[in-house]
Length: 208
Image 1 (tube, rainbow, N blue to C red):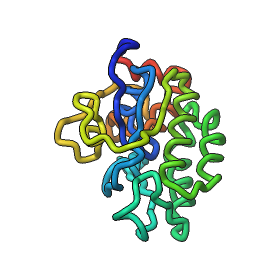
Image 2 (image 1 turned 45 degrees about the horizontal axis):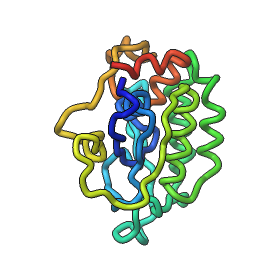
Image 3 (image 1 turned 60 degrees about the horizontal axis):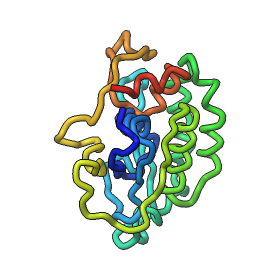
């Protein structure tokens, strides 16, 4: 657990972020979420990883490409002309409906999804803040007002990435997963995996 006078981590926006992302939210009184960078493909900005009966299943939000090369990530629009929302909801329900705490948390999370925010950044922030609140994490999550080229050791924008070569920032101790009897424990999936399986105890798995 970081001390209250520790530097503030800088994170990218993320869709149902991985457990390592929430490890930082659990360890700091505040984090900054980059709102002014250019959009990056094949990252957690518009995708997450869940544990399905067939193993790891990536879920990706399609975005509109009209201004993708010029607009900051906070202005990137979600493409609702494609049926991704229904597909994601069905995939999450199928993967976790038997998890111990799925019914307790799902309705509120689903309501955020079905509110259909226009901007990817707004959806991500709403989901992240909601889940952090459900976990009782006392972390202020604020967006940046200008682009910071380098945040030093506290820059996690590229470190928390599906293809990071540095390895995970954090790996929790194993917890119960519905499909682990078939494929074993899988770490650093979307925080949904931890929340639905461990419920009120989820925050305990975010500590070193």
